Image 1: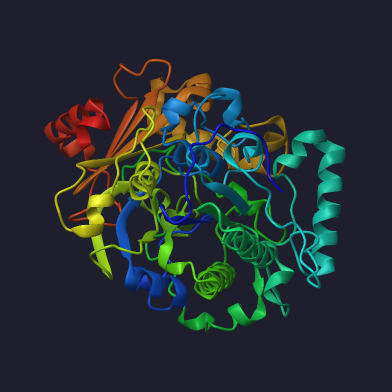
Image 2: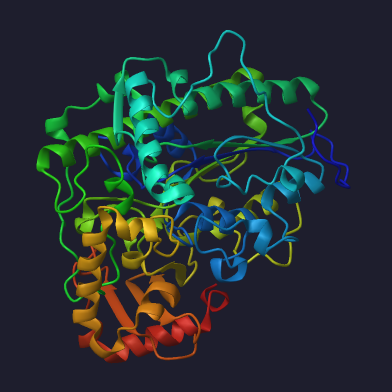
Length: 527
């Protein structure tokens, strides 16, 4: 089904490559090709072995909607104005041209299955030229987030209880079912497997029509919570062999507002509402995450195999990306939503039909906003003037050439925001989160002393982070006064401290000044 009407520039299908644009929610570089030996990810490993893997790729904000709005528009969060999950991109930027919209304007058939934009930003009117296949013959669509009926009932009952107490605010994540599920079901019993089959059917439709190149976006919801995957993927791992986080403390002398209290995970049934997690639970959670990673990897394998079978693999650019990282007990927290390496660093792999270097890994600093201009250049399209990324196409020929001096990310005060980065609600304060919030506030007050101001720290404090070849600088700033001195500064030396365990800003004042000057020069100066 064809959507909307946009004036398109004619483009013959044979003239330009297709694009398979694969998004994976909450995936940190927890893959075999990134050096995690226990990870079972043969399909992504094979893609990396024949493509280019980026060791140091970074998102622009470690939360779903802002990250995706940024990369899909090529504009950074301070430009989009989108900092949390409960405001729509088109409310803030009604006229910005998205990546698929740009391809559509230049004659591509554009379509998506699964989670590509965040919910509420799907942008059917402008970004997509057709609807995907909606229903599959003889394949039942999943009903609910869980495969087991008892878990769907538990979620519904918990939501009913929270709605009665807090009204519509409860729909913003105050109630859930279990954090994980291990069910002996086929892949399509969960939505990612079903969406993969829809994407394959949609691709086959476009190939059969054959009159335009396609931009097919396939978005996977796992390994986002809840960690639900078929039993066969759980069975790939021996729990006793799963490596756990080896740095479980907050950074020494780090910002008290730099880490949250694992709010997102704690809403799940069976997860402690305060305090540490028992080792057995932590291991089960990591097992669940890895099972989801392997589940998604298998779906990607099916999609790529379908390209081969359709005879279009050799004319299709494949790019795979994660929208942000995720703390799995690292620094003592569980979740995304920080300005540290573990949350901002993402997997990024690209394969093109005619790339000169295959199977390489590059340490070049790249950012997710760079995907927009890169794909434009690879497809022979002009890059819109608003785009704030830099094409990494040259790295496909020479992965080890000198590149960017820095990558930039940001996140508003994680400690006093909900897990969607929105300001704390009444519901959050009145539930079991109340004691956690009080505990976090007291920690910040002890550190910040006279600087403490509730409105500043809850509503206006933005953490800006710059990752250079050697250092990570984090500047905590009042967003209302961007030229003022930072409220707090963090500095980590990745040469001596790759896990960011010690903030050395106080002992390196001259280095901090130099790095702040570099930060103030902005992303353009880093090219």
